[in-house]
Amino acid sequence: MARILIVEDDEALASVTRQALGFEGYCVDVAANGVEALDRLSRCQYELMLLDRDLPVLHGDEVIRAVVSLKIPVNTLMLTAAASLNDKVQGLDLGADDYLPKPFAYPELLARIRALLRRNGTGENTMLIYGRLSVDTVRHLAYADDKPLSLAPKEYGVLEELLRAEGGYVSTETLLESLWDDPGNERHDVVKTTVYSLRRRLPDSTLIASSRGMGYRLP
Image 1 (spheres, rainbow, N blue to C red):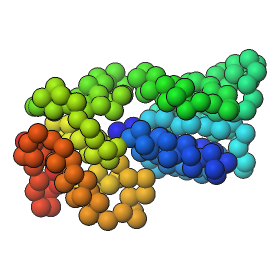
Image 2: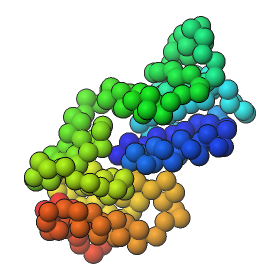
Image 3: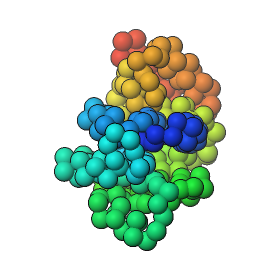
């Protein structure tokens, strides 16, 4: 599941955007300024950063320059109220991968996010298939026996992580770190509950195996 970093000093906008992306199934963190953003980027791997240009403490332009200089592997979508052609050109020339003026419509934001994730340079196939299960990692769609599954975001996230493991075990700690925004404050029970609800949505509950101390796997 893609992990996204929102860098935005407007607390209300950051909160609404985080909720919207979380509903789409993304794992989202928030940084309120440029310094905090670079700290998070140094400690966690993100596929995408939504970067407000006019940031306190450290301007968004300096964040981009640091990302380019340090060769941090993250796609950047720059968000700003400055919408002139010259502003867009400057942002892209600094190293941003895309540029979206504020205010923006969420359907367009989501479409741009999907486009950036598709061309993230990894060469990764967007379809993961293992046995009777498959997921589309860009559109966040899941299938069992080629029939669509109706999954909550965290259920989808668990299923994607299991398919990526290709039959290997995925520990509870790994699932917490990958799928929950603040894994340090979550109990292991939340993973157990999510796996239980995911099993109920599958045509066969034995499609997910578990082992005490090892975690979960697709048999």
